[in-house]
Image (cartoon, rainbow, N blue to C red; front, side, top):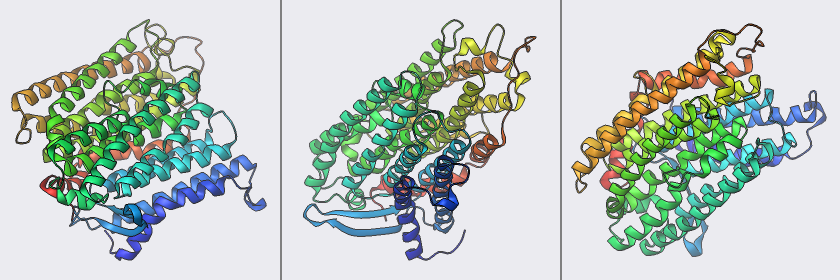
Length: 524
């Protein structure tokens, strides 16, 4: 770790949030003659790599300068009055909860920019693509950095338009319908969420998230908390996505370009669960406690539903799309995150935050891999890929097959890889939930979630068997193995999946003190 002054930390955080917006505007301008390279399209794609790379470097420096001895303390804080009439402030800051998500967002966006530089999705001008990618990055980073309820809402909404156009203009078959479902579901949820945020801010007399968390709901009556949690929770649940508000997700993932699916699964879904932890748990604890058993019940339903949907897709003759399968698996994995949050215990919430990061790494890798398989074979249909006894990816493209198997076993929660710890801690939290919650009910939820892990292992191992195994048929076309740019984009995700699995303390050491402080009522 390095010693950086608070003023430099403030500048770094502001740089991380604002520079992608400036970069998006610059992407739409004509490239200077000396920077065009082979074509203006190549120049703007290189611009995207440069801007996202600068943001990633700033995020890494910010993480190195973060005071790891006091991760519960808000650091790199900026607090400037913006709309005095409403007491809305430009309030930024990070702690042990938001820092890992900030770095994950910067990393995945940079990897997507690198991948797109070599494998630009078919569609309109690269200028618009890069600009939308950078606006999406700015909105996501702002969501994890802002500490004002109204600013949180604005950042939360900022990502919708760029993701809509990435799906609608650069997506595959059915992209228009998928994009409309995405925008309509999330906008409707956001309208309800805004009402809940306004209710909290007006009743408490402030929209400042730090002040509200420190107050710990004391200035809000139980009835106000219940209404606020219901309204805000619906908006957050749509983005998470929680069963039964998930139906927009499979279509969006199936139609989205590869980098769109990576960012949607790896980053955007985390915004919903982050809102549960950052806003609802500390600001309205009594209201959240009322709904916690129902949230846990819907979470475990989502775990089983997602697994059963995946098992239906992997059946021979089902014509299951691999991207659709990973989308349904996300419903199950995010169910573990919601279960951990619903326990209202440090163990469960830490598990939820760990599972968030693990899901971003592993599912981001899986979408990259499935996109590569589709580019090589022309299909993500499981039956087409597994003609006869199997797709023989081990024989035709061994490195690609090995990486796909690695992503699958990481996703099923193999001990020693990142996917294991979050799910285990979420279930441990359910074993002994917070005071006031029914332990028999949560023990039941834990048992159902444990059964869900068996179903998850079943469908992912079937995917590996059908796609990777089998004899190479005579006369089958050769498949290109992993390219250098693909290694560059995927290696960080593989390494971090291993590091998080073998050394979970690196992440839990950041989140645990911040979670303890948050649940105790306050942020310092």
